[in-house]
Image (cartoon, rainbow, N blue to C red):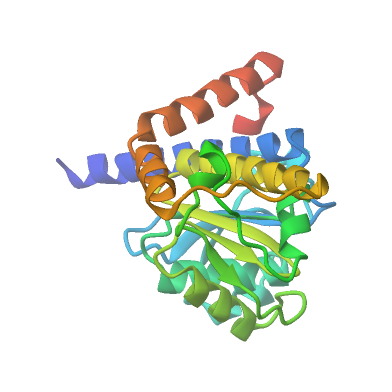
Length: 252
């Protein structure tokens, strides 16, 4: 492969990431997961994961377009001096994730209603009471060290360290973040995490005891979810088809 072909391929990869990430913003708004003009998504474009795309500061999720996503370097402290600098909390959280967790190619951070409700509980554990909640059995990191709006470097570093090798983190008194190799997988994880949280909140609201699965069954169910990677990609592809039918300006 020639050097020009390599450059062309890399540009194609970045463009597809831009389109997918923009679609994720639109879908998050569609599902009412966003909060005002806050919250942020990112996707790594460099092999080491340190150069990444992120949403422009204070752009509403329903208006984000592929072409306006910012390209930033997690190792560049001058990023916040740029005239188009991202939101401080976005930089704090996502620069730390992409600087220290190379496997986390995509990171979605949100305050969706049911996950955030659980994050406000003293114990925000998602117990395995059905097959969706069981997806996160022993696979959800929990951070109970909230230090205020995550605009300081130390807050982002702690969040990244808590995520570790997990694919999602429940951020006490805050919200949630999912990480994955692709936008499709991170989106599907967020979708099911919010549904799992909804199930927990509804079950708690009955005031009746939870029917928690035995550990062995919960683990078996969680492992079964891991064989459904194809469904995760199909889910995101189908949701993009719905966006396209309504108008594909997110891809511009």
